[in-house]
Image (cartoon, rainbow, N blue to C red; front, side, top):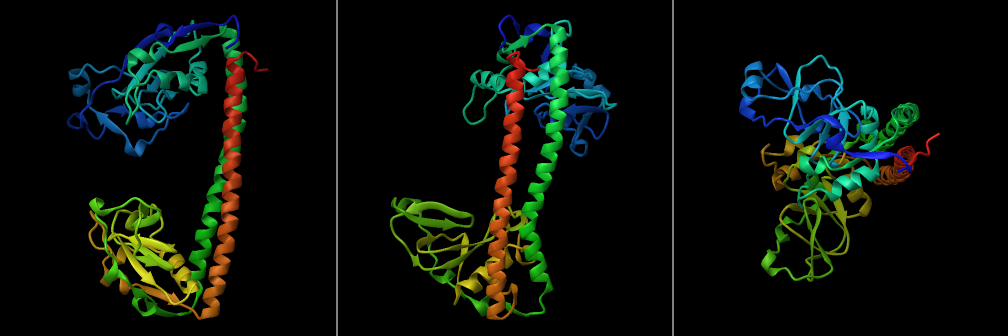
Length: 384
């Protein structure tokens, strides 16, 4: 922080410094007074999320003696992620309150420009200070009392306004660059999926069911109970990949594993089908298939990960793909040469996609670093 600048504890530079209200589900309605929650508080931005908004009525507002949040107030989340993130409340036309895990800060504008305060809450210096004042291990949080002790830099008001103007202009440019990079990243990620959708949708190929082109090894699949596991280097697979390591092994070959149960069957949070090679155990949450050649196995893996398995899954609360349903899944099946060509092309596109993703992710990281560099300069009095 620049020598000569004053600092003030957050609570001491606020006209209002209080927590939101405890609003239970039974208190909520479908319209009326809007309940702003921690999920609406971004790092320097208000996340409207109006489609998920919650409300209370005027009677509840009065009965619970709620504190009204006004446009221009600063909300600070006392929960992650990260703890201490803040935003200014815009004028949405709604009467608002906030939840108990948000602190309401109405800055004393004779001491600090509210926009400067929100910029400071995005700095690593501030976030480190907040983190050091947090409690809890599984879920970090900060008390309002400790939050109120966080020191805030107080340059002269004219200097605050100058800093805000410079940061506004710089961050507007960064926001445009980030939006462009994020769009390119999304396009890169869709490149591979687009290829698979096109290639599997265009072929006039015969169809074969999985049990016609593979051998199902579920009959020899045996789980290892935790009491019988012996630590080792052999991967022990489940529906989502490695779940443990053991000293013994059941398989020693190239195989295709397909999730048998779990929300991923419908949510697609990770690949449904994945290949393994070498020594391994497989538990009873993944089907085990053996193929005659690696290109067929890889072709099937690509296809299964490109489609929805919902028609073959039973139970929405606890989705399950049983062996009978698995065996009847139809697979478009071109000749050997075409399968090899599709697999080869898919691998090439996958490598290019990963290269593009790395480039755009590095670009986003550079933008984040520049964002922090500008904040660091601003609060060191070196922003010109």
